Length: 276
Image (cartoon, rainbow, N blue to C red; front, top):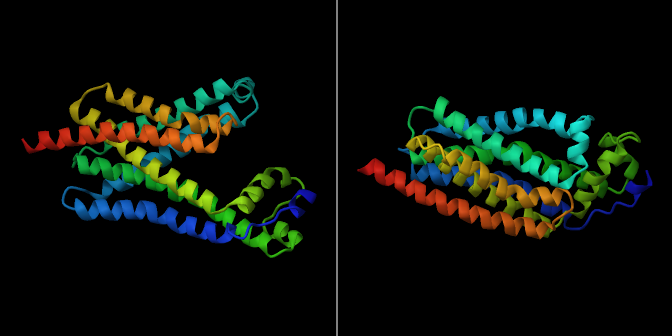
């Protein structure tokens, strides 16, 4: 496995990864503590938990089940999607938008029937975005940290043995090892910024979906799906090598601002109607 012998862990990789792990944990915790402290009387912890469970069921169980057939397994559908950039991008953004926003809608309309306050909608969004960090992003960063520590010791064979990388799994493991080796403070900043934007996006989209439930207006669920799709567009293009990483962050930031502008407007409208 000569490719692994060429791996050199950057001087900033391990400290950058450690700081990233700390900040990834801090992001949802700080969001929750600040919002809960300000709106303790209007919020219920159940909405935070519902947001977390809603994400796991909709995005990590149901959506991944569809992905297994359409992306992972070998069949005519997966071969077409994986072999066509336009199909891959459209499939990815549609699935993310439909599953996550419909998941929010179902939970907020049919399960969380009590304490329907705008403040709880925000708390739901924090739970949704927070569990994505803790259950999806954080384990990946920790994996990179473990890889970086093992390879920094200088004995490649020991590192491969400890990480259980064999001849059969080497090709699949190599990109992760390379990513861990190349991780630096710039990547740290990009990852943390991306998660901050994602958290704000999840909160904003939850408020939009919640407003549709609150007002019984059907158009807000399709609007949230469309906004989610647009927000994810450049991330899907980046996965196909069709867009640079910096453009993803700029694109997401623009659409998060659009989402937040609309969400704040709807939030204030709900608050105004509740005080009448």
